[in-house]
Amino acid sequence: MADRTWYVGNNWVGAYLLDTGDGLILIDTTMQPQVYLVFEAIRKLGFDPADIRLILISHMHYDHLGGVRPLQEASGAKVMISREDWAFMTARPDMIFASGYPLGAFEPDAFYNDDAPVVLGDRSVRTMLTPGHTPGTTSFFFEAGGHLCGLHGGVGLNTLGDAFLAKAGLPVTARDDYLAAMLKAREIPVEITLGSHPAQVGMMDKVGQIRPGHNPFLDPAVWPRLIDGRIAQVRALMGEAA
Ligand SMILES: [Zn+2]
Image (cartoon, rainbow, N blue to C red; front, side):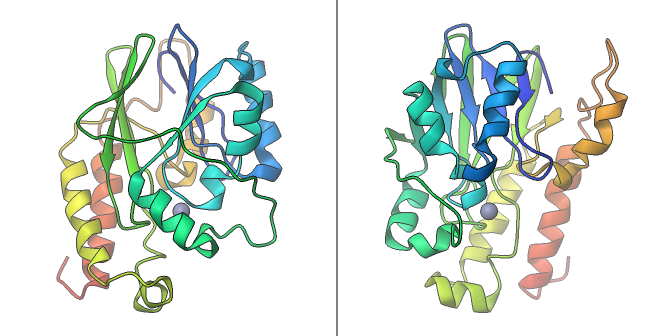
């Protein structure tokens, strides 16, 4: 994806590996039944999954944190999630949507602080609380090879309809929170957009365009296009003119 930054997810949900020179950072873990693909991708890159020092979770849904337990057991990595999502998932484990799948329990080692980036080795990851998809959805921004990478932690509006919010016991103002956070994220000049799901930004279609000296994922137009699309969708959901 970028300098010392790799995609290690599957073809449906993303996971990203950062080499820090002092161990590895893994952002998201995919689902537990598919986590062997994360292990395999890390090994194919020439790294040892045991060298993961930090696991950063974008949000509390099963497809992002399902692999935490086996990855943590293999590496002893510290696990970070937002305080808001940890509170919600412990109060409402049904909202993890793990039904029918195995999900190993885990405890976070730390919560994000948007005023203090996550630092390991020579890498620094800035977090931004971008709630709406879940109460504590977190986005990540970091430099790689002189370019700014951005990963919006969860853009789906499937959790913001009236019926879903009522079932989840969440206020309809979650939509306002989503819009406010999108407007804030829109200001970040992301050059390389990492999809929390690759289809959000057509990542899989660009794999064949990778050439020496040409990174098809380096495109500053992608981030504002992704964010603007979701801003229009939430405004429509809120009954506002787009
Ligand atoms: Zn989700």
